[in-house]
Image (cartoon, one colour):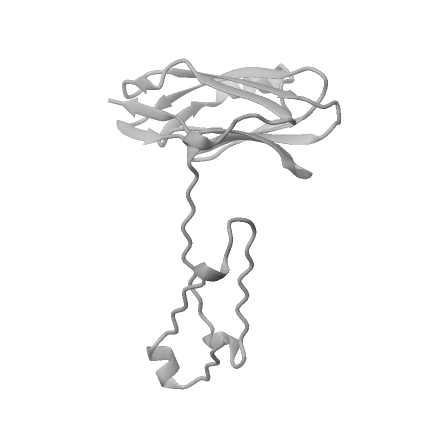
Length: 184
């Protein structure tokens, strides 16, 4: 452990410490305590995180999640339809969040989401730059809906992963790997 004072030398020569040998693949906690003036404390933590999607299994004992795009190759401004299917594998009533990964620059047709919401498929939704978040309560019937979007510009990129999870139970989740989109 190294302690610093408020001297000018400490501010000119930052202390760099590699903690990779002290971390593991599960959960890690890094704590930075100030021994002196907390206004002089600055920290930067750089982390690398990699998921090998080819080795990721989509099998979940809690949820069945399917996200199907009618096409992953399109022209700029061409309509793409996404079909979403979510089913709870247990009968416990819970608030679930479903995140549907989108390619960058997707212009989501909110009318198609409003229609699904009006049909009582889910409670509400948020459209974020890389995904749509659907809020719903589980029940015995599966949730099946579709929405539309249009790519705004050309790209060769992946979506964010799609995931469904129980808001109150972190382990109850199912994940689908990102999909590659080519828009010209």
